[in-house]
Picture 1 (cartoon, rainbow, N blue to C red):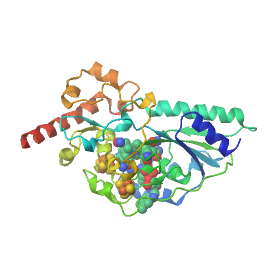
Picture 2 (cartoon, rainbow, N blue to C red):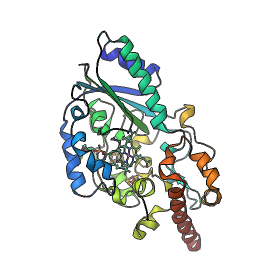
Picture 3 (cartoon, rainbow, N blue to C red):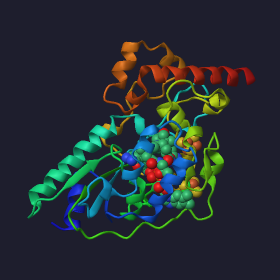
Length: 316
Ligand code: B12
Ligand code: SF4
Ligand code: SF4
């Protein structure tokens, strides 16, 4: 079983890109500790707890030789949030409109691993992760040639753009590896300028404690009042720094039913969201990435967005 066989099978299973990185302590991984020390992880304590393991995938799987990284395009046929002027319309991040990618991509990765085990002449060790393990997925994606890490910190595939889920199989097989992807941001700084909360404090450096994605999804309890206004009508995640990226200007769309927007979130107004009963919200959150905040977290975000919409309407 060669690297090319695995990539061909990944394509067959619906992955949009697949590359292989050496299981090594790549130089970019060293930045993670500095980032934690600067407090940029906010209250995401799990990142601190797993810092040692994140320094090298061989901490996760000591026999690891290769990291097979896949990318799955989740872009669908809907306008960008930056193209919608209406302050009463709820902004929900593109990745969260369909089914939970942990489940969908995870199942496809397990199918790929089963196929590898059936094809391999010898048994081998392996771990599959989709945003679920102590692995710096973007660094391994860059070294697998999937795409470069942009100044907005997202991995950008030169043809697909950055609307991609990353997933990996760490394995003990000594596979042929790909060349790392080259940085193509050049002199552009559009994402740094567009961020509503100035969370991208320097190229490739994101302060989560200011990022709308962190505030609306990961932060428990109250969102700090000075940041409320900048949240605008974002109620779950944020896509602004990717929407302004020229590499997403003509991003291909996925027809995969898994990523098509659920009716409950499609073109939904803040008032409609606020009026949903707990049962209705629980139904819509079922097997959705958005279940992370639970109905309670979503209501907190909607309340702030509604207050922002009232202020915006008074100004008109
Ligand atoms: C924690 C986390 C977050 C945090 C912090 C994000 C961040 N930028 O660090 C928050 C909650 C804010 C977040 C938001 C989002 N996330 Co997130 N998140 C993660 C998670 C679990 C860990 C990332 C992490 O460790 N961050 C800490 C930084 C320091 O590490 P890093 O991102 O790996 O960055 C490395 C490189 O940038 C490197 N580096 C490389 N070159 C250079 C150059 C210089 C000069 C410097 C200084 C550093 C540097 O340093 C770091 C390694 O030590 C990953 C999954 C995973 N296990 O990797 C998903 C992941 C990164 N998220 C993902 C997604 C989709 C999102 C959102 C788009 C969701 C949304 N729409 O709201 C946003 C994007 C916001 C943004 N601009 O990053 C995808 C990204 C796919 C992609 N194309 O890159 C991932 C990979 C999940 C997945 N499996 O698909 N996320
Ligand atoms: S996701 Fe939104 S808030 Fe976070 S860095 Fe990007 S533009 Fe800024
Ligand atoms: S907007 Fe410009 S600087 Fe930011 S990630 Fe895209 S190309 Fe790079």
